[in-house]
Length: 309
Length: 167
Image (cartoon, rainbow over all chains, first blue to last red; front, side):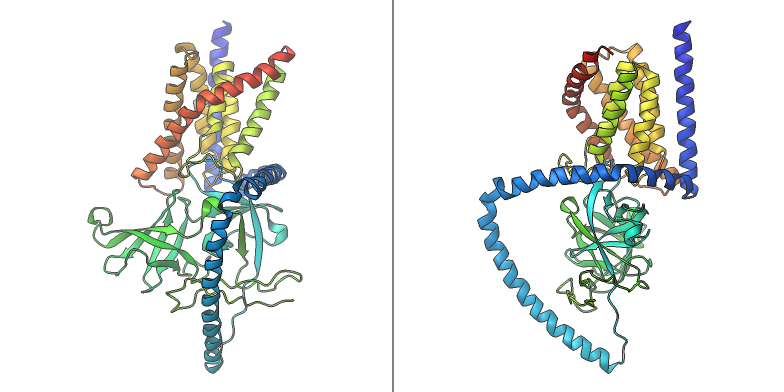
Protein backbone atom coordinates (compact mmCIF):
# COMPACT_ATOMS: atom_id res chain seq x y z
CA UNK A 1 0.00 0.00 0.00
CA UNK A 2 2.78 2.33 1.02
CA UNK A 3 4.84 1.36 -2.03
CA UNK A 4 1.88 1.99 -4.30
CA UNK A 5 1.22 5.40 -2.70
CA UNK A 6 4.86 6.35 -3.14
CA UNK A 7 4.77 5.20 -6.76
CA UNK A 8 1.75 7.35 -7.59
CA UNK A 9 3.04 10.25 -5.54
CA UNK A 10 6.33 10.19 -7.43
CA UNK A 11 4.48 10.09 -10.72
CA UNK A 12 2.24 13.03 -9.78
CA UNK A 13 5.28 15.00 -8.58
CA UNK A 14 6.94 14.38 -11.92
CA UNK A 15 3.79 15.30 -13.84
CA UNK A 16 3.46 18.52 -11.84
CA UNK A 17 7.04 19.63 -12.45
CA UNK A 18 6.96 18.65 -16.12
CA UNK A 19 3.80 20.68 -16.69
CA UNK A 20 5.27 23.60 -14.71
CA UNK A 21 8.47 23.48 -16.78
CA UNK A 22 6.46 23.39 -19.97
CA UNK A 23 4.37 26.39 -18.90
CA UNK A 24 7.57 28.30 -18.10
CA UNK A 25 8.91 27.40 -21.52
CA UNK A 26 5.77 28.63 -23.26
CA UNK A 27 5.66 31.85 -21.23
CA UNK A 28 9.32 32.54 -21.77
CA UNK A 29 9.19 31.62 -25.42
CA UNK A 30 6.36 34.01 -26.20
CA UNK A 31 7.05 37.02 -24.01
CA UNK A 32 9.61 38.43 -21.67
CA UNK A 33 7.38 38.82 -18.62
CA UNK A 34 7.53 36.13 -15.91
CA UNK A 35 10.71 34.55 -17.20
CA UNK A 36 12.53 37.85 -17.06
CA UNK A 37 11.40 38.48 -13.48
CA UNK A 38 12.71 35.08 -12.41
CA UNK A 39 15.97 35.70 -14.22
CA UNK A 40 16.43 39.07 -12.62
CA UNK A 41 15.77 37.79 -9.12
CA UNK A 42 18.22 34.90 -9.54
CA UNK A 43 20.91 37.12 -11.03
CA UNK A 44 20.49 39.62 -8.18
CA UNK A 45 20.67 36.88 -5.55
CA UNK A 46 23.73 35.23 -7.04
CA UNK A 47 25.60 38.43 -7.93
CA UNK A 48 27.39 38.92 -4.56
CA UNK A 49 28.39 35.25 -4.57
CA UNK A 50 29.71 35.51 -8.10
CA UNK A 51 31.72 38.59 -7.15
CA UNK A 52 33.04 36.83 -4.05
CA UNK A 53 34.03 33.77 -6.09
CA UNK A 54 35.59 36.03 -8.70
CA UNK A 55 37.70 37.87 -6.10
CA UNK A 56 38.78 34.65 -4.40
CA UNK A 57 39.96 33.01 -7.58
CA UNK A 58 41.53 36.29 -8.72
CA UNK A 59 43.52 36.35 -5.50
CA UNK A 60 44.84 32.85 -6.10
CA UNK A 61 45.51 33.66 -9.72
CA UNK A 62 47.51 36.75 -8.74
CA UNK A 63 49.68 34.67 -6.42
CA UNK A 64 50.23 32.18 -9.19
CA UNK A 65 51.00 34.83 -11.80
CA UNK A 66 53.09 36.98 -9.45
CA UNK A 67 55.34 34.36 -7.91
CA UNK A 68 55.08 30.91 -9.37
CA UNK A 69 54.77 31.85 -12.97
CA UNK A 70 57.83 34.17 -13.00
CA UNK A 71 59.88 31.70 -15.00
CA UNK A 72 58.42 32.83 -18.27
CA UNK A 73 58.35 36.53 -17.44
CA UNK A 74 61.76 37.40 -18.90
CA UNK A 75 60.95 35.84 -22.22
CA UNK A 76 57.56 37.49 -22.19
CA UNK A 77 59.16 40.83 -21.38
CA UNK A 78 61.33 40.71 -24.48
CA UNK A 79 58.35 39.84 -26.59
CA UNK A 80 56.35 42.70 -25.10
CA UNK A 81 59.14 45.19 -25.80
CA UNK A 82 59.15 44.12 -29.43
CA UNK A 83 55.41 44.41 -29.45
CA UNK A 84 55.49 47.92 -27.98
CA UNK A 85 57.96 49.05 -30.63
CA UNK A 86 55.69 47.63 -33.27
CA UNK A 87 52.67 49.35 -31.78
CA UNK A 88 54.47 52.68 -31.62
CA UNK A 89 55.19 52.44 -35.30
CA UNK A 90 51.58 51.61 -36.01
CA UNK A 91 50.42 54.42 -33.77
CA UNK A 92 52.50 56.95 -35.70
CA UNK A 93 50.87 55.81 -38.87
CA UNK A 94 47.44 56.11 -37.31
CA UNK A 95 48.11 59.66 -36.19
CA UNK A 96 48.99 60.58 -39.75
CA UNK A 97 45.88 58.93 -41.06
CA UNK A 98 43.77 60.67 -38.46
CA UNK A 99 45.12 64.07 -39.37
CA UNK A 100 44.52 63.40 -43.02
CA UNK A 101 41.07 62.18 -42.22
CA UNK A 102 40.23 65.33 -40.27
CA UNK A 103 41.40 67.51 -43.11
CA UNK A 104 39.24 65.62 -45.56
CA UNK A 105 36.26 65.87 -43.27
CA UNK A 106 36.65 69.61 -43.01
CA UNK A 107 36.89 69.89 -46.73
CA UNK A 108 33.75 67.91 -47.28
CA UNK A 109 32.01 69.73 -44.42
CA UNK A 110 31.24 66.48 -42.73
CA UNK A 111 30.02 66.67 -39.24
CA UNK A 112 32.56 65.13 -36.93
CA UNK A 113 31.16 62.11 -35.27
CA UNK A 114 31.11 62.17 -31.50
CA UNK A 115 32.46 59.07 -29.84
CA UNK A 116 29.99 56.65 -28.36
CA UNK A 117 29.92 56.64 -24.59
CA UNK A 118 31.39 53.52 -23.04
CA UNK A 119 30.75 51.61 -19.86
CA UNK A 120 33.58 49.39 -18.67
CA UNK A 121 32.59 46.15 -16.98
CA UNK A 122 34.11 43.06 -15.48
CA UNK A 123 33.07 39.50 -16.15
CA UNK A 124 31.86 37.82 -12.97
CA UNK A 125 30.16 34.72 -14.29
CA UNK A 126 29.84 32.41 -17.25
CA UNK A 127 27.14 30.27 -18.81
CA UNK A 128 26.17 27.36 -16.58
CA UNK A 129 25.92 24.94 -19.49
CA UNK A 130 28.16 23.75 -22.29
CA UNK A 131 25.42 24.35 -24.86
CA UNK A 132 25.40 28.14 -24.79
CA UNK A 133 27.97 30.89 -24.56
CA UNK A 134 27.11 33.80 -22.32
CA UNK A 135 28.76 35.77 -19.54
CA UNK A 136 27.56 37.77 -16.59
CA UNK A 137 28.88 41.31 -16.16
CA UNK A 138 29.08 43.36 -12.97
CA UNK A 139 27.24 46.34 -14.46
CA UNK A 140 23.50 46.73 -14.77
CA UNK A 141 20.73 49.21 -15.44
CA UNK A 142 21.88 51.56 -12.69
CA UNK A 143 25.14 51.98 -14.62
CA UNK A 144 23.26 52.66 -17.84
CA UNK A 145 23.33 49.17 -19.32
CA UNK A 146 20.37 48.26 -21.52
CA UNK A 147 19.36 45.19 -23.46
CA UNK A 148 20.88 44.95 -26.97
CA UNK A 149 23.86 47.16 -26.20
CA UNK A 150 26.98 45.88 -27.94
CA UNK A 151 29.84 44.59 -25.82
CA UNK A 152 33.38 44.89 -27.20
CA UNK A 153 37.05 44.71 -26.36
CA UNK A 154 40.00 46.15 -28.24
CA UNK A 155 40.09 42.87 -30.18
CA UNK A 156 36.56 43.22 -31.49
CA UNK A 157 32.94 42.39 -30.78
CA UNK A 158 32.25 40.21 -27.76
CA UNK A 159 28.47 40.06 -27.95
CA UNK A 160 25.35 41.91 -26.91
CA UNK A 161 23.49 42.42 -23.66
CA UNK A 162 20.45 40.14 -23.48
CA UNK A 163 19.31 40.54 -19.88
CA UNK A 164 19.84 43.19 -17.26
CA UNK A 165 19.24 43.67 -13.57
CA UNK A 166 20.03 46.78 -11.56
CA UNK A 167 23.62 45.71 -10.96
CA UNK A 168 24.37 42.84 -13.34
CA UNK A 169 23.76 41.90 -16.93
CA UNK A 170 24.02 38.86 -19.15
CA UNK A 171 25.84 39.01 -22.47
CA UNK A 172 25.19 36.67 -25.36
CA UNK A 173 28.57 36.05 -26.96
CA UNK A 174 28.94 36.02 -30.73
CA UNK A 175 29.96 32.37 -30.40
CA UNK A 176 26.60 31.45 -28.83
CA UNK A 177 24.40 29.37 -31.08
CA UNK A 178 21.59 31.94 -30.72
CA UNK A 179 23.84 34.73 -31.95
CA UNK A 180 23.44 36.25 -35.41
CA UNK A 181 25.49 39.29 -36.42
CA UNK A 182 25.23 41.18 -39.68
CA UNK A 183 28.76 40.95 -41.04
CA UNK A 184 30.78 41.85 -44.08
CA UNK A 185 34.10 40.91 -45.57
CA UNK A 186 36.38 43.87 -45.01
CA UNK A 187 38.25 43.76 -48.30
CA UNK A 188 35.32 43.56 -50.71
CA UNK A 189 32.38 44.68 -48.49
CA UNK A 190 30.37 41.53 -49.27
CA UNK A 191 27.66 41.05 -46.68
CA UNK A 192 26.79 37.90 -44.78
CA UNK A 193 25.49 36.68 -41.44
CA UNK A 194 27.90 35.55 -38.75
CA UNK A 195 26.34 32.70 -36.78
CA UNK A 196 27.59 31.37 -33.47
CA UNK A 197 27.99 27.64 -33.03
CA UNK A 198 28.66 27.49 -29.26
CA UNK A 199 32.18 26.42 -30.13
CA UNK A 200 35.44 28.28 -30.65
CA UNK A 201 34.53 29.25 -34.20
CA UNK A 202 31.60 30.94 -35.91
CA UNK A 203 30.20 30.35 -39.35
CA UNK A 204 29.57 32.84 -42.09
CA UNK A 205 26.26 32.18 -43.78
CA UNK A 206 24.38 33.66 -46.72
CA UNK A 207 27.60 34.78 -48.31
CA UNK A 208 27.08 34.90 -52.07
CA UNK A 209 28.90 32.13 -53.89
CA UNK A 210 30.66 34.42 -56.34
CA UNK A 211 32.29 36.57 -53.63
CA UNK A 212 36.04 36.18 -53.61
CA UNK A 213 37.22 35.32 -50.11
CA UNK A 214 40.50 33.94 -48.86
CA UNK A 215 41.59 32.37 -45.61
CA UNK A 216 42.86 35.19 -43.40
CA UNK A 217 40.38 37.81 -44.63
CA UNK A 218 38.94 40.01 -41.91
CA UNK A 219 35.24 39.90 -41.15
CA UNK A 220 33.73 43.03 -39.63
CA UNK A 221 30.26 44.10 -38.55
CA UNK A 222 28.18 45.64 -41.31
CA UNK A 223 25.95 47.69 -39.02
CA UNK A 224 22.85 46.34 -40.77
CA UNK A 225 21.30 44.74 -37.73
CA UNK A 226 21.10 48.04 -35.91
CA UNK A 227 22.76 46.69 -32.79
CA UNK A 228 26.46 46.56 -33.59
CA UNK A 229 28.08 49.64 -35.08
CA UNK A 230 29.58 49.25 -38.50
CA UNK A 231 33.22 48.32 -38.82
CA UNK A 232 33.94 46.44 -35.62
CA UNK A 233 36.15 43.39 -35.87
CA UNK A 234 34.40 40.01 -35.74
CA UNK A 235 37.10 37.58 -36.77
CA UNK A 236 39.30 36.07 -39.43
CA UNK A 237 38.19 33.56 -42.04
CA UNK A 238 39.74 30.23 -41.15
CA UNK A 239 38.05 27.82 -43.55
CA UNK A 240 36.13 28.14 -46.81
CA UNK A 241 33.78 25.59 -48.24
CA UNK A 242 31.73 25.93 -51.39
CA UNK A 243 29.55 22.96 -50.62
CA UNK A 244 26.66 22.66 -53.02
CA UNK A 245 24.97 20.08 -50.85
CA UNK A 246 24.59 22.39 -47.85
CA UNK A 247 24.03 25.67 -49.57
CA UNK A 248 22.21 24.56 -52.72
CA UNK A 249 24.82 26.29 -54.82
CA UNK A 250 23.73 29.84 -54.03
CA UNK A 251 25.95 30.55 -51.08
CA UNK A 252 29.33 29.61 -49.83
CA UNK A 253 30.14 28.60 -46.32
CA UNK A 254 33.05 29.87 -44.30
CA UNK A 255 34.30 29.45 -40.79
CA UNK A 256 35.42 32.50 -38.87
CA UNK A 257 37.80 32.46 -35.93
CA UNK A 258 36.83 35.31 -33.58
CA UNK A 259 39.75 37.49 -32.52
CA UNK A 260 38.46 38.00 -29.01
CA UNK A 261 40.03 35.49 -26.59
CA UNK A 262 36.74 34.50 -24.97
CA UNK A 263 38.24 32.03 -22.53
CA UNK A 264 40.62 34.64 -21.11
CA UNK A 265 38.23 37.56 -21.15
CA UNK A 266 38.07 39.58 -17.93
CA UNK A 267 37.21 43.16 -18.81
CA UNK A 268 34.91 44.39 -21.52
CA UNK A 269 33.41 47.63 -22.76
CA UNK A 270 29.70 48.16 -23.26
CA UNK A 271 28.89 50.65 -26.00
CA UNK A 272 26.00 52.92 -25.32
CA UNK A 273 23.63 53.62 -28.16
CA UNK A 274 24.52 56.14 -30.83
CA UNK A 275 21.98 58.62 -29.50
CA UNK A 276 23.35 58.43 -25.99
CA UNK A 277 26.50 60.39 -26.50
CA UNK A 278 26.74 62.07 -23.14
CA UNK A 279 29.81 60.89 -21.34
CA UNK A 280 29.34 60.86 -17.57
CA UNK A 281 31.63 63.26 -15.75
CA UNK A 282 34.65 61.63 -14.18
CA UNK A 283 34.69 58.84 -16.73
CA UNK A 284 37.77 57.93 -18.67
CA UNK A 285 38.33 59.02 -22.24
CA UNK A 286 36.57 56.48 -24.41
CA UNK A 287 38.46 54.87 -27.23
CA UNK A 288 36.93 54.76 -30.63
CA UNK A 289 37.09 51.19 -31.78
CA UNK A 290 35.75 51.91 -35.18
CA UNK A 291 37.38 50.83 -38.36
CA UNK A 292 37.52 53.15 -41.25
CA UNK A 293 37.08 52.01 -44.79
CA UNK A 294 40.43 51.32 -46.32
CA UNK A 295 42.20 50.24 -43.14
CA UNK A 296 42.41 46.72 -44.40
CA UNK A 297 45.95 46.17 -43.24
CA UNK A 298 45.34 47.29 -39.70
CA UNK A 299 42.09 46.11 -38.21
CA UNK A 300 41.72 48.85 -35.59
CA UNK A 301 41.96 52.53 -35.65
CA UNK A 302 42.84 53.48 -32.12
CA UNK A 303 42.29 57.13 -32.52
CA UNK A 304 42.09 57.60 -28.78
CA UNK A 305 39.62 60.35 -29.39
CA UNK A 306 37.01 61.40 -26.91
CA UNK A 307 36.20 64.24 -24.67
CA UNK A 308 37.83 64.60 -21.36
CA UNK A 309 35.17 66.22 -19.21
CA UNK B 1 15.52 14.21 7.06
CA UNK B 2 14.99 17.95 7.03
CA UNK B 3 18.66 18.51 7.70
CA UNK B 4 19.53 16.29 4.77
CA UNK B 5 17.28 18.26 2.46
CA UNK B 6 18.82 21.49 3.67
CA UNK B 7 22.24 19.99 3.05
CA UNK B 8 21.23 19.10 -0.50
CA UNK B 9 19.89 22.62 -1.08
CA UNK B 10 23.19 24.15 0.10
CA UNK B 11 25.07 21.69 -2.09
CA UNK B 12 22.94 22.59 -5.10
CA UNK B 13 23.54 26.28 -4.46
CA UNK B 14 27.31 25.71 -4.35
CA UNK B 15 27.27 23.56 -7.47
CA UNK B 16 25.30 26.22 -9.36
CA UNK B 17 27.84 28.82 -8.25
CA UNK B 18 30.75 26.64 -9.36
CA UNK B 19 29.02 25.87 -12.64
CA UNK B 20 28.36 29.53 -13.44
CA UNK B 21 31.59 31.10 -12.24
CA UNK B 22 33.83 32.67 -14.88
CA UNK B 23 36.76 30.46 -13.90
CA UNK B 24 35.84 27.37 -15.84
CA UNK B 25 39.42 26.14 -15.96
CA UNK B 26 38.20 22.58 -16.18
CA UNK B 27 36.51 23.32 -19.51
CA UNK B 28 38.09 21.44 -22.40
CA UNK B 29 37.38 23.05 -25.76
CA UNK B 30 34.37 24.78 -24.21
CA UNK B 31 32.97 21.59 -22.70
CA UNK B 32 32.57 21.37 -18.96
CA UNK B 33 30.99 18.65 -16.88
CA UNK B 34 27.37 19.07 -15.90
CA UNK B 35 27.83 19.01 -12.12
CA UNK B 36 24.14 19.76 -11.59
CA UNK B 37 23.17 16.56 -13.42
CA UNK B 38 25.70 14.61 -11.37
CA UNK B 39 24.30 16.01 -8.14
CA UNK B 40 20.76 15.17 -9.18
CA UNK B 41 21.89 11.65 -10.00
CA UNK B 42 23.53 11.33 -6.58
CA UNK B 43 20.40 12.59 -4.83
CA UNK B 44 18.03 10.46 -6.92
CA UNK B 45 19.82 7.16 -6.37
CA UNK B 46 20.02 7.79 -2.65
CA UNK B 47 16.72 9.49 -1.91
CA UNK B 48 14.45 8.17 -4.64
CA UNK B 49 12.47 9.53 -7.53
CA UNK B 50 10.51 12.25 -5.66
CA UNK B 51 13.66 13.96 -4.39
CA UNK B 52 15.23 13.36 -7.79
CA UNK B 53 12.33 15.12 -9.51
CA UNK B 54 12.23 18.08 -7.12
CA UNK B 55 15.98 18.67 -7.10
CA UNK B 56 16.01 18.00 -10.85
CA UNK B 57 13.53 20.81 -11.37
CA UNK B 58 15.38 23.18 -9.03
CA UNK B 59 18.77 22.41 -10.58
CA UNK B 60 17.40 22.61 -14.10
CA UNK B 61 15.70 25.97 -13.61
CA UNK B 62 18.86 27.37 -12.01
CA UNK B 63 20.90 26.12 -14.94
CA UNK B 64 18.45 27.75 -17.35
CA UNK B 65 18.70 31.06 -15.51
CA UNK B 66 22.49 31.11 -15.68
CA UNK B 67 22.60 30.20 -19.30
CA UNK B 68 21.41 31.65 -22.56
CA UNK B 69 19.12 28.71 -23.13
CA UNK B 70 15.37 28.43 -23.02
CA UNK B 71 13.99 28.91 -19.52
CA UNK B 72 12.21 25.71 -18.50
CA UNK B 73 13.96 23.36 -20.93
CA UNK B 74 16.64 22.34 -18.45
CA UNK B 75 14.05 22.13 -15.67
CA UNK B 76 11.87 19.83 -17.78
CA UNK B 77 14.78 17.60 -18.75
CA UNK B 78 16.33 17.39 -15.33
CA UNK B 79 12.99 16.72 -13.55
CA UNK B 80 12.49 13.83 -15.93
CA UNK B 81 16.00 12.48 -15.45
CA UNK B 82 15.71 12.90 -11.67
CA UNK B 83 12.57 10.80 -11.71
CA UNK B 84 14.03 8.16 -14.03
CA UNK B 85 17.26 8.00 -12.08
CA UNK B 86 15.28 7.42 -8.90
CA UNK B 87 13.23 4.73 -10.61
CA UNK B 88 16.30 3.01 -12.02
CA UNK B 89 17.31 2.39 -8.43
CA UNK B 90 14.51 -0.16 -8.13
CA UNK B 91 15.44 -2.12 -11.23
CA UNK B 92 19.20 -1.85 -11.50
CA UNK B 93 22.08 -2.39 -9.19
CA UNK B 94 22.94 1.27 -8.81
CA UNK B 95 25.48 0.45 -6.12
CA UNK B 96 27.85 -0.71 -8.87
CA UNK B 97 30.14 2.01 -10.23
CA UNK B 98 29.91 0.57 -13.77
CA UNK B 99 26.12 0.80 -13.72
CA UNK B 100 26.32 4.34 -12.35
CA UNK B 101 28.70 5.42 -15.11
CA UNK B 102 26.55 3.81 -17.80
CA UNK B 103 23.47 5.54 -16.42
CA UNK B 104 25.28 8.89 -16.35
CA UNK B 105 26.39 8.39 -19.93
CA UNK B 106 22.83 7.62 -20.98
CA UNK B 107 21.21 10.50 -19.07
CA UNK B 108 23.88 13.00 -20.15
CA UNK B 109 23.29 12.18 -23.82
CA UNK B 110 19.51 12.33 -23.33
CA UNK B 111 19.86 15.66 -21.50
CA UNK B 112 21.84 17.23 -24.33
CA UNK B 113 19.46 15.93 -26.97
CA UNK B 114 16.28 17.00 -25.15
CA UNK B 115 17.48 20.52 -24.32
CA UNK B 116 18.57 21.08 -27.90
CA UNK B 117 15.33 19.59 -29.15
CA UNK B 118 13.42 22.19 -27.15
CA UNK B 119 15.67 24.91 -28.54
CA UNK B 120 14.90 23.62 -32.00
CA UNK B 121 11.17 23.70 -31.27
CA UNK B 122 10.92 27.01 -29.45
CA UNK B 123 13.60 29.24 -30.90
CA UNK B 124 15.09 28.37 -34.23
CA UNK B 125 16.22 25.24 -35.98
CA UNK B 126 19.75 24.04 -35.43
CA UNK B 127 21.58 21.89 -37.86
CA UNK B 128 22.69 18.60 -36.40
CA UNK B 129 26.36 19.14 -37.15
CA UNK B 130 29.31 17.03 -36.14
CA UNK B 131 30.36 19.78 -33.75
CA UNK B 132 27.01 19.55 -32.02
CA UNK B 133 27.34 15.79 -31.56
CA UNK B 134 30.87 16.36 -30.32
CA UNK B 135 29.44 18.65 -27.64
CA UNK B 136 26.84 16.15 -26.47
CA UNK B 137 29.20 13.19 -26.45
CA UNK B 138 32.01 15.29 -25.05
CA UNK B 139 29.99 16.42 -22.10
CA UNK B 140 28.60 12.94 -21.50
CA UNK B 141 32.13 11.52 -21.52
CA UNK B 142 33.38 14.25 -19.23
CA UNK B 143 30.52 13.58 -16.81
CA UNK B 144 31.42 9.88 -16.73
CA UNK B 145 35.11 10.60 -16.11
CA UNK B 146 34.44 13.03 -13.29
CA UNK B 147 31.68 10.97 -11.65
CA UNK B 148 33.87 8.64 -9.49
CA UNK B 149 35.70 11.65 -7.99
CA UNK B 150 32.47 13.59 -7.57
CA UNK B 151 30.77 10.62 -5.87
CA UNK B 152 33.76 10.12 -3.60
CA UNK B 153 33.81 13.78 -2.49
CA UNK B 154 30.05 13.81 -2.03
CA UNK B 155 30.09 10.61 0.02
CA UNK B 156 32.81 11.93 2.29
CA UNK B 157 31.11 15.26 2.76
CA UNK B 158 27.81 13.62 3.50
CA UNK B 159 29.36 11.25 6.01
CA UNK B 160 31.01 14.13 7.81
CA UNK B 161 28.11 16.54 7.83
CA UNK B 162 24.71 14.86 7.65
CA UNK B 163 25.31 11.42 9.15
CA UNK B 164 27.53 12.75 11.88
CA UNK B 165 24.61 14.66 13.32
CA UNK B 166 22.45 11.57 13.21
CA UNK B 167 20.06 12.72 10.49
